[in-house]
Image 1 (cartoon, rainbow, N blue to C red):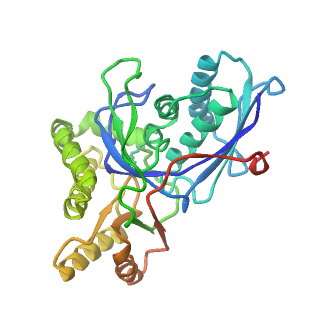
Image 2: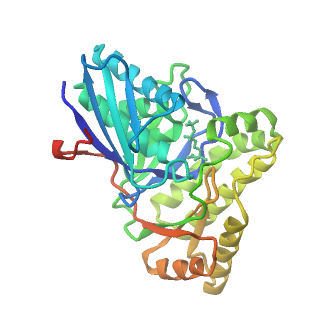
Image 3: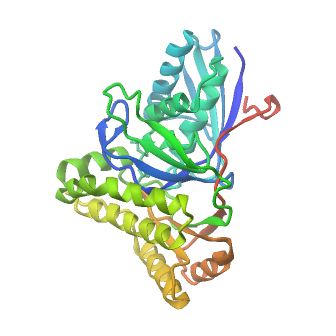
Length: 336
Ligand code: DP6
């Protein structure tokens, strides 16, 4: 058994996952599409299976993880142990280069890095499909971070989740000019976690039923926009889909509100910039938090940054390219 260290990056959905068919296996109610980020934001994870560990141990950013985070990691480790036919417990250490639970998708990069490092440490030669299934058990959106580029998570039909995994729509080199300008608004911990929020939405929102009924069409249009590098369609679909998700959240009872005044100023700033240009040059999307991810092309990054610099609640701006997906690090980079 060898120690293994991997780095993985978050992904930001342009067609969002919100709602589960099975909350144990994290089987989603709908397909989703995301873009994997480059290593401007990343999680590094080292895993070792050994008889010297009596229990699975998880250290996150140098602190012992909560029971709930440990529980999610154990689901991934158990699936890997079962496939590798090993019984050893594991030590897992993981470090983010950005704040955890700030809506910057740390669970996605975290569980993708865990799936890759743990299956490698267990001696499995797992396919991307298998890694995606392992990562999904920790956090649904993580199944998309095992691949680089533009990624679709197929919801699947089977009860055991064996057909619910991510596939690449296009590689990270497909649209080299594309950028994600992240406006960090509030790096605090969020109030309502995604799992809890999506269950409440599915149980209480009439608008959500309409979302699930029509989302297949959005998926098809988004895939076409990506494959054709059709910026106008990509940006419009991205903004409409984000607003749709947040409308459904507001239609939840009691309502779930992740956007704040700063997020709203960013939305207006993007539309003002587009109006000034006479075409769409930027498009925002928001996950379960107030931070904005603004897609644009390299040529317009400066204008987007200018717009953001006038909004006083924007704490930090990070510019990402499309990332290539997880990679193995040499043993000299091991976290323990
Ligand atoms: C709004 O993947 O965090 O970011 O499966 O319960 O861990 P769990 O949820 P999670 O939900 C992500 C929701 C989202 C949309 C998305 O990434 O598609």
